[in-house]
Amino acid sequence: MIIPKESYLSGDSLHYLLLATNNKAKVCEYRSLLQSLPFRLVTLVERGITLEVDEVGESLEENARLKAMLLSGESQLVALADDSGLEVDALGGEPGRLSARYAGEGASDRGRVSHLLSKLKGIPWERRSACFRCVIAVATPDGRLGFCCGECRGLILLEPKGEGGFGYDPIFYLPELDKTMSQLSLEEKNRISHRGQAASGVSRVLAELGL
Image 1 (cartoon, one colour):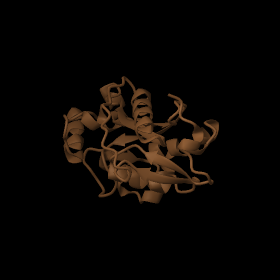
Image 2 (cartoon, one colour):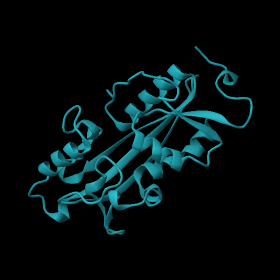
Image 3 (tube, one colour):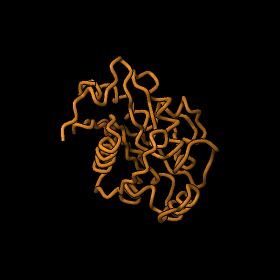
């Protein structure tokens, strides 16, 4: 069914943009990254949406599209969803799209980090290169869709450092800054991270979708 624009956009310049994630740390980053947009950012919790989307896609792009389109349809709002992953060269690109489930369903961030480090045991420093990738999909209730992507390269440390961030941030080392992602302030992280790079294209995607 095609939904008329006026049914999901407000009458003034301030529209709603649904952040299609239940990850509180990710929501915090997006509120900072997207604060200049003329949209009111709302979350699944704020809209009372409990729909869980299975990430069954074979790529980051597929999972981002799946989440954005299903949750836009459910909410009747423009929805932004992402999928991101850590690609470690010595592991053939693993964990990639399976980053959140690499140590098994329900594993904690600490558990995922420990599992990855165990996989890299004995791998020398010069072979511990890796890339964080993020794909953002923006979908409208009438089925329009746009993408933007970002990436950030670094190295995997032998042990975690830093208290900030989430996920694999404590072991993702940035040589040019001599810090891990976890040791950066939110402002620093947003400037250089894969999610920050992808989010810089959201305004363009919204314009291309006529929003």
